[in-house]
Image (cartoon, rainbow, N blue to C red; front, side):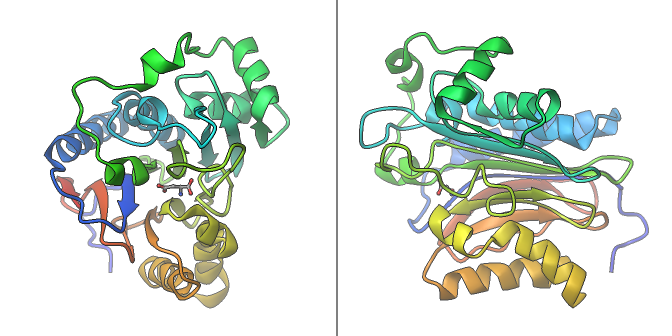
Length: 291
Ligand code: ASP
């Protein structure tokens, strides 16, 4: 049960789930704490869940610690192709981009798709032309931008680092954002679950979800929308619905995790991988982090 003293605002972020022992995570955990602290302040000031989801996703894209934005690794063709999705729960407005090259913040381009087009998703060159027309920040030299100096990154780090945000504002509205450079060594043109509404990202009036893990399995299980369906048609709790969705994805052979938040109560974080970097506001309004 939700305690009556529970603050209406809530927030969770993730920095990827992996099947490795996630060691030496202090820098990333400190960064997640800082991001949640900033998001909490924004929500306390009355910011909309959608704006908080975008702003925190930008911070995570820009820090270079995750496989999203600046921290993205190249695909098998040596190119940097990025995916992102943002969704507003109250009206189900969605913006998404996939296989986007040459722009710093895929989630910002996704937000522009949500605001300024009649569409849900733009891909490849069309997404890039749109980003240019919307004056989104361009990357002039990808090799200078993506190679982050001074940060030790193991193959494990490069394989597990999608980022995601779920937020609930003081009106109880929900929003979700997911952004990724995708799986290490992915094929050129490969798109995973992260930008696909209902797979790696979803928000409606019941739940906001952001996923991370082996995208192909999350797509096959339509994980993010499945959680809402379990709540709606089965009457299950958020926790049971989210854990059930991860369990079923695991039965198919996949691994990963997700963050999910409902209109009341705390976020939940089921995963079947060895770890998932995450931060959140607990029921007392305190910032928490874990791997
Ligand atoms: N789900 C992402 C993808 O398949 C990868 C990840 O979460 O690390 O593109």
